[in-house]
Amino acid sequence: MKGPIMPGRMQQDRNTGRQGAGREPGRGVGDWLSDRVLRGAIATAMALPYPRRLALMGGLTSGLIGPLAGYRRRAERNLALIWPEMPAPRRAALAAACCDNLGRTLIENYSGAEFARRLPDAPAETTGLEAIERARAERRPVVFVTGHFGNHEAPRRVLTAMGYEIGGLYRAMSNRFVNDHYAATMEGVSGPVFAKGRRGLTGFLRHLKAGGMATLLFDLHDRDGVEIDFLGRPALTALTAAELALRHDALLVPYFGIRRPDGIGIDVAVEAPIPHSEPLAMMQEATRRLEQRIAADPGQWFWVHNRWKADRRKR
Image (cartoon, rainbow, N blue to C red; front, side):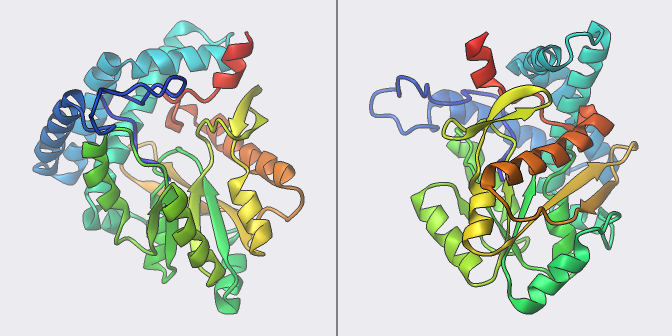
């Protein structure tokens, strides 16, 4: 899992490793100011009734934060890379929809119990539900894979309400002030949540070995990954989810939280498990499943991420 990208310094320069002298990464003045702005926006939104809360954060992210932080421009650039024939007004509309979904997802996850009450009692698509029920009965591990599409936390919450315990491994945000409170929105929902890193991975592996269920998001650029075609362009993709499934004889199950046209409701899809084979083939299939969701509603995917870094370097 990963928190949403927020305004402020995005990431340390990975090539040079430069930081401010003596300054803890992710805790500079700019990070602090960005966090103050975000906290103020969240507090304002949380004071509103739920539907207006989502509309406010969606509108702010699409109309103000997105353009100021360069998200809209980056989303349009990625859309042009993938669909160069798409008219510019259509790209602009999808970039705006992407940012709107980002804002709604953020405030939904901060809304906790109220968000959970708005979710359906069961998945709308249940192809894989019988398999995970059987895995739970047999104490067989399950690795769920999903992408930054719709609300990626919704499936975990729906299955939690049905009695499942699902942990996760997430990549901490570069702004540590923001990460401190955003990480709390993922904890206490279901099973244990681990920050990516040696210590977190150790806990995550123990959880799986004990027959646990956990979630991984696989649609972010991974500099140590392998190239897999994603929407027609090579993208560095981690094989971690498939490798863990093979190592621990776990099911590999894609699931998704799909936003309804009203911008508030969420449908959950639990897809059929991906058969065990080679890790590359398994993650190619996971990628294909996500591509199908994006093709159905491209405005719900996380176009603001630099997903095709490797492809851009070659061009």
